[in-house]
Image 1 (tube, rainbow, N blue to C red):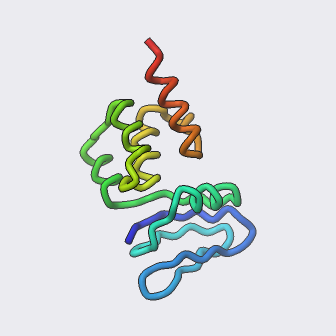
Image 2 (spheres, helix red, strand yellow):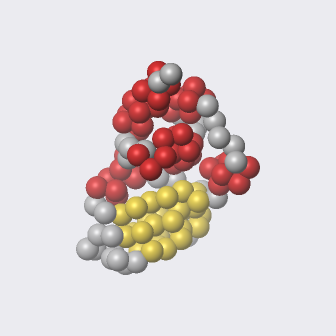
Amino acid sequence: MAEYHVKNGSAVAKAFKVRGGHTVVPAGKEADLVDAKELTEVQIEAFDREGVKVRAKGGKAKKDEEDGDTKSVTEVLAMADDKDVPFMSFKSAASKLLGDKTPAKKDEIVLALMELATKP
């Protein structure tokens, strides 16, 4: 199970599967989801296209932030290939290296990281 912060910028309410049922985030509102079903990269990107921002909370990504654990470009690229690493954990680690210009899609993030790795 995962934890997410959702900011619904779309014109319609969005429902998310959670343990024991679902949680609805009304249009224009924000909510924290606890014990939510893990979302795939494709699902997060689809929500993003609809104006719904989904950000992972808690778990390993939060622990890394609290520890100040900034990974190298090589380590973050390895996370992209690891099927056991959730997309939002990978994106969080990449954003520590890329900053505000971090792309939304995984393949674009990988390209930006490879470009960063080749800079002197």
